[in-house]
Image 1 (cartoon, rainbow, N blue to C red):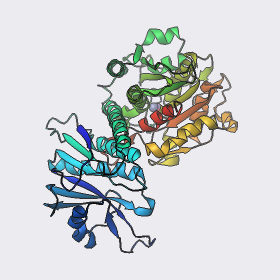
Image 2 (cartoon, rainbow, N blue to C red):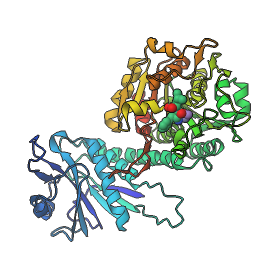
Image 3 (cartoon, rainbow, N blue to C red):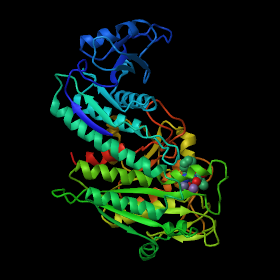
Image 4 (cartoon, helix red, strand yellow):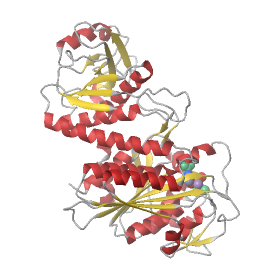
Length: 503
Ligand code: BES
Ligand code: MN
Ligand code: ZN
């Protein structure tokens, strides 16, 4: 998608599709009350063109609601698309992100390959944040997961123009625009990795894709395999990989900008299970095909590093992806086995399907060994997290309030949603092993928390955040602004967390 930012009048812009946003001004809480949709523009010709349809009652300006006008009078565009952002009193920048995505997804199946989005102005829409969000939303909307359809018609948008309203601070809009392109492309890069099936996206291929990205972005990247796992005594990571014919990949990406202070060193660790059968504790076949997205945490770290390399915050970052395929075989690890992790802890394997925490345990230890002073991991870790929070919020956990605050502060900007769950010592009891130091599962209750407690053991004293993205990394249903398939969450929030240490 070719994009550009202009500061022109929307009325006089020649385009196949002009997109303008609207809000509902009505303050009534009654769901049956009449909506009062208003267009978010100062341009009188546009207001006039939309007047009849806004007065008709056919359009209520609810979030992502669209209405199309052909040959709008007094406006140069071929078509005018009005996109709702919801109630005016509640409208936020994130609604613009969704609205821009909805506009792009409106255009795609209608053979419209070029569109112009006119940004709103006003107090709720600061130039930098609004421009950035609109661009991100457009990129997110442009992604479709149908790469393997033999009769695939490329419906992607060729050209997108973002119009920043006259009178807005052009420097701020430009900066927001540039960031939006970086975030949007990086999030889609993650999604393209997550979308690949397990036979195409093996740990080795994930390593190659990471290395190629790093080369292009100017990042240092090392990809190791079995031998290095043995050398580092990564018994937990190795155990997960040992049942598969596919060798594991330990991917280490380093960002060390000139002029960055020696500390902090941020350590990102991603779960990269390219397919999770469950291993000997095999999963039911129903729905198992979805376990190709069990590398979404790792793919998020790769996408985040891509964005970080382009945004150039003055802070050191090390990202580690622990990639392996979890398979049953004659060589596979088994329930009852004892595995010695890199940290020296003896892990009693209860269930080989609790493999994510095992690869992450060694990833966290390695990040600390490489000098990380703050840790953040992301993983499609537990079904229990999906039971607790559904597919709207992801789970977050931390052993340090200050570190967590850095993450929480970025969520307004990222528009992603996390709910913090506890990691208190009383839960530790559930994973106490009688034969070793720790068990890899903790029984039925609080499964997302006991998984986090397991990881906490390997973060040790280092400030740490854990993101359980099992419920949000894959969209089960399409939404007006995003296709069904990989979501690219939590790339934006991870990058915001990193940037918060460079401020
Ligand atoms: N990859 C799964 C978790 C998962 C579930 C991700 C649903 C996405 C959607 C993970 O490796 C797993 O199998 N976890 C087990 C842990 C259990 C054995 C303690 C689970 O959640 O059932
Ligand atoms: Mn599993
Ligand atoms: Zn898994």
